[in-house]
Length: 132
Image 1 (cartoon, rainbow, N blue to C red):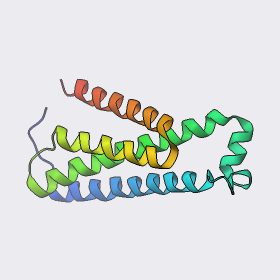
Image 2 (image 1 turned 180 degrees about the horizontal axis):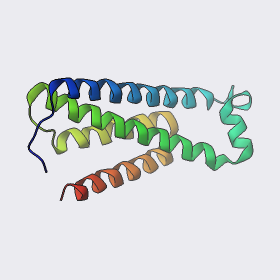
Image 3 (image 1 turned 30 degrees about the horizontal axis):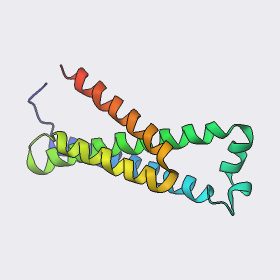
Image 4 (image 1 turned 90 degrees about the vertical axis):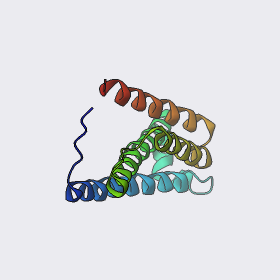
């Protein structure tokens, strides 16, 4: 793993980009949650997706939550590096997994939470193996 730290301007640009993507994915989570409400599901895009195949909505929800995890984690890691000049460790990554799990459980239930956590852990394992 490289010990070189990027310039502050590069970190700021990266933080802004990843924060924007995190917010976009969080907005998508809220939209899917609102569209899944029982009184509007028949007239919403989620209802149209459910008519095609109910699993399509489930997979999209999990992938959107995975996007929140990926971009949120990159934002947290870069922000920690920018503010303290110390690379983020496991507590930040575990905290982001817990945050995404709570959001997934509250918005979509235990099944979506399980899928999002499995994808998030797979991504963490991939990054861990990548740095070796």
